Each structure stands twice: as C-alpha cells, then as structure tokens.
Image 1 (cartoon, rainbow, N blue to C red):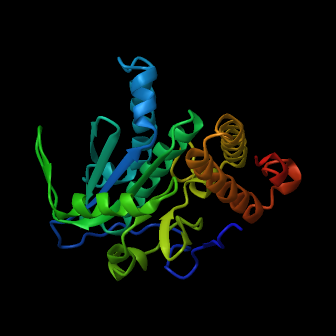
Image 2: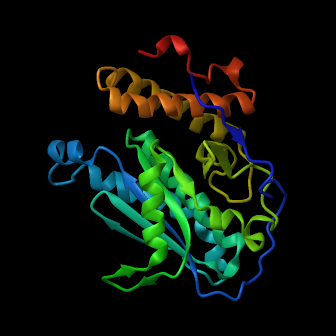
Length: 265
C-alpha cells in the first residue's frame, strides 16, 4: 500500500509574495544530487555523448529559476562530478535564496525525469568552502547523508532548515514548495513546475499541464521498461504515486493526467 503523503501547509510555505532581506550569515544552502543508474549509463554511453548534454541541459533549465537571487547580488553556483551535482547559494538572502535553490532543483529534477533519468538528493545549510578545484565543508557532508536516506527519487530538505524562522516563516509564493512523507520533507518539483515556467512570477496553466503530461508519459515508460527489474521498478512505482497525488490535488483526473493502477506490473 502506498504511504500517505500530504502537501505541507504548516511550514509557512503558502504565502503570496517574496520579501528580499539579508541575514547576517556566512553559511550556504548546499544541495547534493546523485543521478541513479550511472553504472548502466556508463556501459551504454562510455564517452558521454548522450548523457553529458542531458545533464548540462538539466542544470541550465534549473539555473533559469535563480534569476531573482542573482538580481539581488547573490549567486548560485554548482559543480558536476561524474553522476553527482552539487548546487550552493549564500544563506544571506534567507527565504529568497532558499526558494531560488528549490526552484533550481525542481527544474533540474523535472528535466532529468523527462529524459528517463532518476535522481535523489539532499539540501542542508552550513559552512561551505568552494574554489575552482575544491568543495568542502559539513554542509555537503550532511547533504550526502540525506541523499543516502532518501531511498526514492526525491530530494530531502534538512530539518535544521525547516526549523529556521528566518527562512520558513518568510513570505513565499502561494504554491507549496515541499511535500512530506515518512517524516521526510522533499522538494515538490511537480507542483512547482506546474506553476513556474519561463517567468518566475507567472502562472501558466497550459505549460504546467504539458509538464504533467510529459511526466506521466515518462513514468509509464519506466513502469513498462523495468517491470522485470524490481529494484528500479520500485522507484517508478513511487513516482507513479507522487504523480497521482499532484494530479489529484490539482483536480486534473478528468483530463487523463493520472496513472491507472491497472498499468502497474
């Protein structure tokens, strides 16, 4: 039986607008994302002719949503290494920085899934050092730990961030940025991508429906492709449940956006 999920309404993530302000902190929001199934990818594409452009395009799409923080004088940075991607951004703009990172990761994750690549990860907050060649610090270690316990294709958010009133109680957009399951809070990338497209401040229902349709088709293909691979199939079953949850919340069942239980192997 699928585990019960709910969209977060009690973490201050449901308000209109964003108020730019600065926090006196040298810390960073840091995310670590692992792309699943890398061994099979390497065997099929050792030179990365297909894989690398997919990753770079996914990063590019995600970074589109960091425009707001850049305009405020902040900067979201990243490193790609093998099948892992690390994004980080200064905490100093508080909720604005955090929202920009969430939106970036939502765009990144959605683009990966749309190309049949699943990922899992974590977001933490703390000291982070970076140079041209090095990334170091407890924040990246914590983000890696979160990735290890994520289990399913989701990006978990550290509880320390969720308990910080400077970040979570600040005004946010009306859509919910996160969902919760098994006491783990993760990025609600489908909900975000339903509302955020092209322009960070616009609501485009047609683009959102197109995103959901693409996600539905990708999950259906995965369920069929991996029906004889239980470990991978479990991840697509989780995506199916998550997809149907968002379709239900958006009241789009009558538009054939959901995934029927009958297609599950």
